Image (cartoon, rainbow over all chains, first blue to last red; front, side):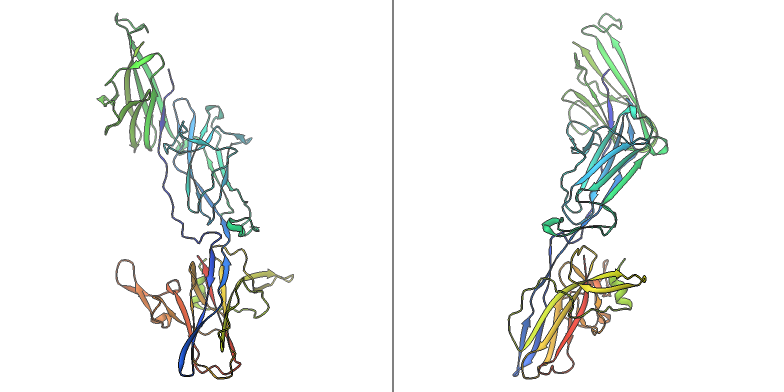
Length: 301
Length: 166
């Protein structure tokens, strides 16, 4: 059977009110006085300072990791440039205890909380340049072979990091100095993969074959009914189930069911749709432990 | 740490005059008989061998958000007549917050609307949710000093205050 997976959603942006790096701060004073019975005003020179760049970052895990039916773990995190300059960051994911690397680390472009074709893998862990206050949604896949060791996700400002106050002269925006802020321009989250931190979403998938002759032989013309039971041990946001229509079969129109109710095939207001060879059912926000049952049918060609 | 509020409460700070190299500044046009110049400095702390900390005002570098900047205004009567009714005004630079005056600088009149000047304690501003509240340093948009008596020929003076970068 082809693998199916569950997905969840990403986070929200943060406003930034700091003066931007490289901006000119200007001061001018004026004096008004009386001379020969008239009042006059004289302005001073304009004194100028260039605002330096402060390097700061926050990195937070957006929700508990999701384990799918194949025991792969998807971790979502948001990285925010909390400094005042244009800055790229270098992100790495390692698995305790020997620091082995994890699977793909990507920008969650489509915001679906999982690593898919629409997402952009990071090359050497380097993000694009982020504007001050900009938020980047990241997704990391840890293969089942990683076991249950904690995963550590670390992000560092590309210009430099270290003790707050460390300066990188002239390396900030517009040739201004760059100075490490209170976060050290470095952030790290450690994510245990077991225990109450994890919403285990298990997928049990079964199939039942019904051939035209009444037997259960998988012959041309037989109908396969796939039933997936998604069991949640905790709350999950924006859960979506996707299952591809297997090669060599064709989808039976109108066969998508969620907990027994029929869903329409079109991408309309209800939770189900079939598109581009994928059956997709939006389970929405699951607030408490429980299970949902999804089924659909295909015909063997 | 909100240094602006700490300065509002009690202390002022001292500046070292004439030794620091000023921030980049274009020279003022000679409009005589009253010359006025401004420069900006930042505080630098150095630790001496005996453990004490020495604080001085130096040319600004590494001015990141949150850095307090010292704004210095020097004025002088370059003519041969006394000048009366001298008023020196300085808008608080955009992207900074007023943080109090230096030691030796008298309390200025301040404005929160750019038009009316008074002591900070007398001013009120609209409060979120309706009504008004007492104005604070962060509401100040301009500061001004009125010399109490005419400035005699050849006399000079200096005012200094702090502006914290947003």
